[in-house]
Length: 596
Ligand SMILES: Cc1cc2nc3c(=O)[nH]c(=O)nc-3n(C[C@H](O)[C@H](O)[C@H](O)COP(=O)(O)O)c2cc1C
Image 1 (cartoon, rainbow, N blue to C red):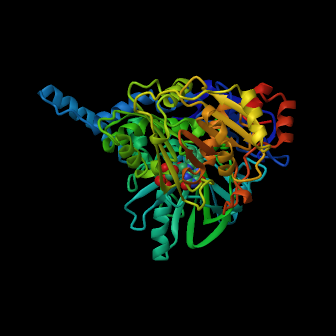
Image 2: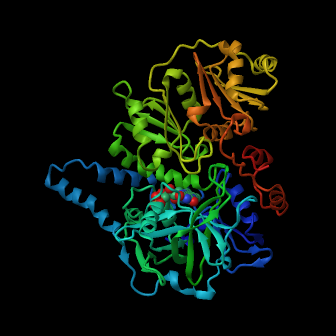
Image 3: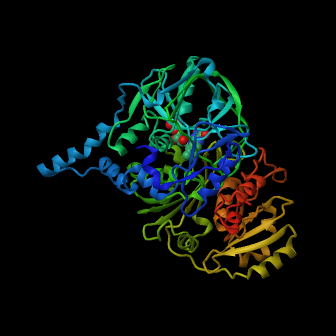
């Protein structure tokens, strides 16, 4: 597939805009619209200096685009995968023939060698001509440590050359020929890197940009180590990927890419990477990561530079995550057969919240499934999982689901455990390891024994107890477990404040403490709470009442790490885009998504 096939979904922005902040801010705002478009920026600038290459952003703009890129509904592909994984034994000759037909797609999963001059090598810059700053690479956020390639497909191979891998990692431009490689410690890219490090050998790396849009999703697919993600490309496209040989290293890349950056990574050298405004909506703090020395940049004759912007949800990665969620359900079900369906809400940034429908058959079944999820591949990064029975409402119907859960919740439904967390998680006391929370909402409804007060009355009583409390908003007061969101100006750990509220416990069940502005914004509240808590430290139980400390942590809490800042747009840039008539969100929407 080529970009032109997505023409009906593309909005062209001819206004000259800067690659630093302006282009990414506009793409960020576009992603919050009800029907976002793919944006084609024809006039990218670097402090006024024009680039030759246009910039494409929000490629996975909306559901229709996703379907166009996949070529058919994602559910249809999921069904094809399921049938392959769980074939019903053929009984008749006709069924046997049909079954063989089902195996045919497997031949498309094996890459082919491209013959001829590949599109991705129509122009070649080598040696002194190499200059990464000739590409319109963006700086997304004001506090970013520099410019980052944000949708680069990073192709690597194992030391013995037998295993190919592609992963999507951000890449920081350290200089005109040095690129930071942000493969996180748990990822296959990092596993391969360690092989080279142990052997003391340089690792060949190639970064692909553009080409068939499906490559970018494949690079994000959490396939087990040893399986080349472009096998999925062949399966979905119904034709094998065609790989071309790089010019200055042994890596092979799809022949139709727009841009290829070739080079070598010396595993003995690390460089500080970041900060970077990340998809958690928080910055990730500077940390050492490997670096690639660029030996060649090759491009198509008419290359486009593709980029994405991450930050607070919703952003483009919601659609990348959606494809993964749907296509990986049949794979997960091979190890967890009683997992009926699941949903990773975008405001839970994928690893912070999962809602799952299961078919429980014995006590502790949900606990078993929770532990299975926390042990499998990248699902092990998941912090919070809520289990519902099959008859629960559609998992995407937020309010109905919340009401269903709250009517079945009691502190005994909580499982708090410990495990690996995403490298980007900022909430755990130590990096990479933290709390896990499971909630079993598969049981019967519980008795409603709470006597809620109005928000006004509750606030008055709370203020009398402690002036740290500056606001209260309650949700679902008609359920067995109303949720009181308590805004504080924090002067002491929230555990102490929770205890002080004991006289009010008859009116309370779930109390969430925040010191940020999401009290009346449920969408961003879920984002903040699931991001900020470490279940081992931040959940307090007293009888039927549960306190949750979702505040930003710091010295008051004896938090041993640096708490990162929020990712927020630069006000002057938003104002300029507004003055140029490019912002199509209402002021209310801009406020809801914390853009202003
Ligand atoms: C927009 C976007 C940016 C990403 N950036 C990174 C990154 O910088 N580092 C990383 O390790 N994973 C990143 N990921 C997730 C990986 O692409 C994903 O975990 C992938 O499965 C890793 O592949 P691997 O296990 O083959 O290395 C990103 C995902 C998306 C959608």
